[in-house]
Length: 151
Image (cartoon, rainbow, N blue to C red; front, side, top):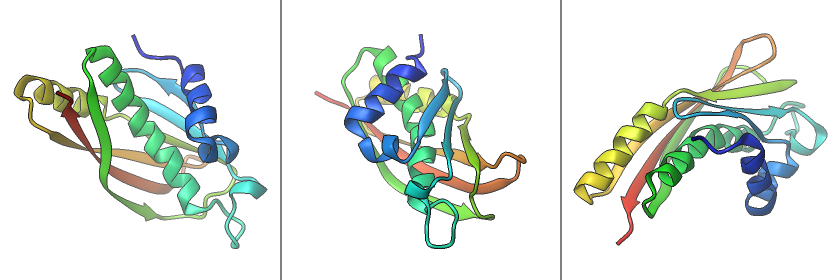
């Protein structure tokens, strides 16, 4: 069963306070999809009156990482997870409420299963797309997650 969004948001407050204070919130989480929102405010803006790229990155990363954490927890194994690479593209100023969605849960599930079966580290690229309230894509982030079963 997927962990609740409210538990992840409490986790944010204590373990990732920069994300919490800038308004990053997990809204939906299941095995295949995660949705995170963040609203443009004074605390997360850049000098150009739009959302700072790093705040978008925190929201995008959470939409992938929450699924990674959930899959690991469900496996019952001790697995290390780390972002090895990331890339991003920005296509429009991020203002208003931005929603980041990742639907790559199946990819992390396959990589985790292979890591558990083989004992070898695995990597998995996951994509998170941020859209504004009008449904226009403002940014796309790709994260390469590494997984390794701890001995």
